[in-house]
Image 1: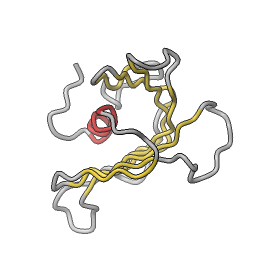
Image 2: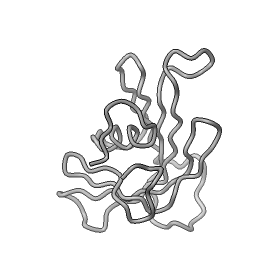
Image 3: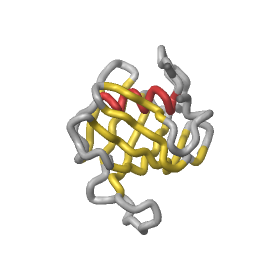
Image 4: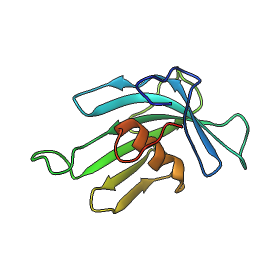
Length: 131
């Protein structure tokens, strides 16, 4: 489901045995950001309950002066939608998708294909297919 049309409970990404569902809608930010949405990740090998993450994506535009040369997606694992959390959380993760093809991972999240596919959905770039 395209993020622009998604409602809580909708599937945003399914890849490599992982499913990413929207739990709480993202808040649009300055021209290129989607802030503090909550998604739930379930995997074939993991707990059927899944793990929630509060996620922010900052999308850039290749070749535009003054814009970053990467897309940035970061988040914090959460267990309660309403709990107050420190910022940044100690288990925050971040992935920078550089336009030259490099990927830079920071933090505690294990590498997984869902992060890249979620970035593609949130930033609406390339050959992303909603089907």
